[in-house]
Image (cartoon, rainbow over all chains, first blue to last red; front, side):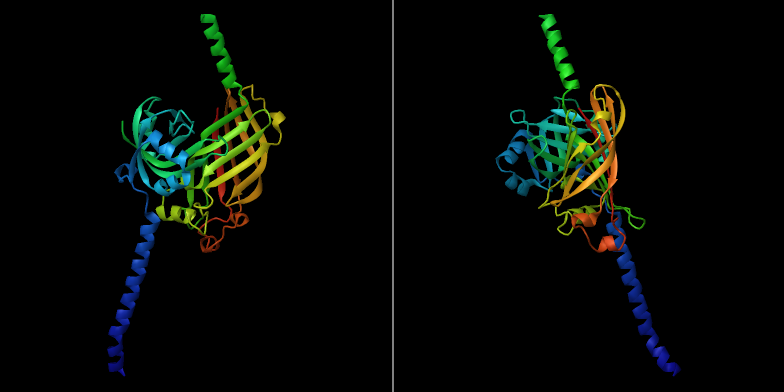
Length: 156
Length: 181
């Protein structure tokens, strides 16, 4: 009887060990997912580098195609600062406007890059890298608006 | 000549100060569906379009769903996914409403005013009435507005295991702030 118990115990140990490994792996995966954050946009590779006015006009010509091409991608957009809006004292949004149509791209900045955006002035040449959320006709302003989040100043 | 320039400058300045329609493209909308067991489901959209007509009291907001920024990539993916906001098919949240007690606000006089705004919030093509208390601070022709309210996700057809399991609040808190010029 005692001999039989001794024969089973290595299997029991293996099952317990296997279970422990599974629990730890599951906890590790959960921890990884729960604590994962977006990387600094400055360090991410751009899918496209575009000139602001040409980019905005792509949406004006066919916003469905432009959204398929650019939405949810990291883009570098080069242009001239048309306007700066401060929704609160802690942040600033940069607007690049196609002055012939009034259509525009607007960039909200990643927390660590807000300070550099605050140093900008209207008329500055900029290169902004950001996550494109797509663009379409704004129902309130009746112009095309293209949204960006988590942006960073690429260079000035 | 100088007098003409001065006069035109004055007209332009007073025109912008007392323009009937105040707008912004940088209103902030916070979405907080965090719970005691999960702090992750909350996001912020800083590029929301908003307009207030000071004469008629109409209020409008429009937010691009995909521009809500979460800290966690997986949660953001779920938020935009087909089972949740389905932002590929329903790319905007909109609110169209009216200041119910417009006479309480003197837009020509600096000060803080509390009003009731009622209107329709559309999420995923489902429109439900919303009524909320809004604080409007008038300063030099600029309106700074703030409000907070809750919505029931089930009202907009948003259901699922994370909600039932208490990882996502059934009634997320929405806070809105806008500086309209």
